[in-house]
Image (cartoon, rainbow, N blue to C red; front, side, top):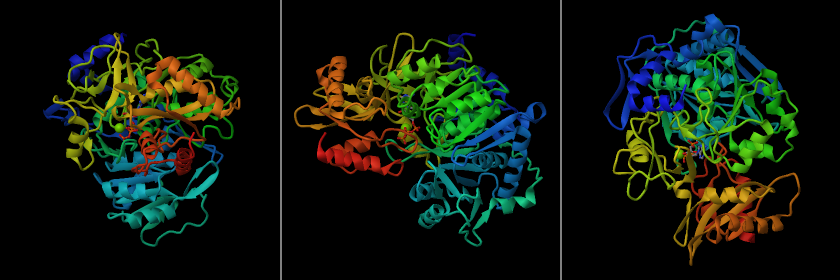
Length: 627
Ligand code: ATP
Ligand code: MG
């Protein structure tokens, strides 16, 4: 099969293409119309079709693969493994769905799921999907404030939570956070269901509001909850963007389009067929977790592994032991995680039997060449960079080994995925940028199936945030890109990550790549700061690898040389700070806007999604003390 033919058809005859792809899922009633685009930029796919995500993910497989593993929950934090076959998962989901119904949850009601990365969280999601309730998963590492804001946006009837999360061996009781959040919230849920893992001791339950799931489920052990057949465009879930550039946006997703897009991408992109094993290291609190830990693999009839713990604990080999044990075929992770592993010796990977292992996909942030080279050398396999967004729900730029694997070009997440009509637009003229020239990456609407339908409760924000940057109606989340002659697209960072040095426009990413090519550097963040003479100058924050023990001062000097050699004098970093850690969002993205604000003595802005406040404090001190 040729990628080019498939791609062309998906763009030139979208309705015929998607009508065919739609047959990969179960419809209770077939759609009347494939696409309704009468109200741009809003669009509806598979209009009138009735389907259900839970039915497609679970019930549909019972006859053929009821005894096959559906989900594996591996926790190094609690030193436990939980395995569920499709039949067992079906039972668990029915029970959970019955409990939710008994709490008054019905079709269209919201349920906030604030849970650690456990199978119970996935079960709760599927239970919502089964009864047509809209889930909003809030990453279990978020604090009370983040939870309160999301609760007020979603106005849930029920909150599902756990007794505690656990990170690096430290138990974090959730109920105090939940109480705090519910006190802050204007629209708190009436009921809280607590999955008790026995980590936090006796639970401080609030009479009349909170109940233990173990108590509630007793009445519903053998429940058979009918599937709610939803119109394809009814909302399935709400999920917030990472908040890298500002206040997070509540992405609303549909049912039918999402299921169809996942079914297509599972075989064409991730090369996973029924019965095979996928391991995504993302947390279910992020879009990758929704699409490729839970719904995608299950819709495909595959086995999905959920991992709770650090990538380096008990040792950096842990993920690869899991790959060996379960015969993982495709793994999905992030550049951030790989850069953590890169600090350690590679034998933890090469010592394992990886004979069933075929593909590693990385997404979420620019994949720097040194990291890409390192991991593909270690694995002896090409590593596939994936570019997408919470908004899109599935990859925008990728290679498609399940359809037609093209060669990797380092630094590029590859080619437009099926169904995505991508263009690169000059931000001043609004014209298509010629090959090799920088522009803004846009999607020509209508957005393909799987992508967001709107911002939850705020259609205007959907239009303003994504469709109002150009004269033409085009979708953009404002990432810079260059497309080469063959369609390989390179992401240069966000449009606000550009540094203007005396009229030269430099991408933070180019300089970061250059700094990272120094063998002692583990990770680098580059920002532009105001300069009287040049307008802006780049400054660098870098962490060093643990192995080797390089001298920070000497390394900084060498980094500067490397940048000048590779990119010329204009890119010369004005200052280089070697630090212990870089500030990131909880989803692992560098918070450049906060670094920049600190460096320019401004307020660091919305820090609600900041992972480790200590990292930002260290930066503040480093800036005061000088490099
Ligand atoms: P917010 O929209 O709230 O500011 P965010 O954009 O970080 O946060 P996500 O949806 O988690 O929210 O991230 C999507 C963004 O991540 C993309 O728009 C892009 O900037 C970046 N990104 C994702 N994958 C890649 C990749 N492979 N290479 C380069 N950048 C990537
Ligand atoms: Mg974004």
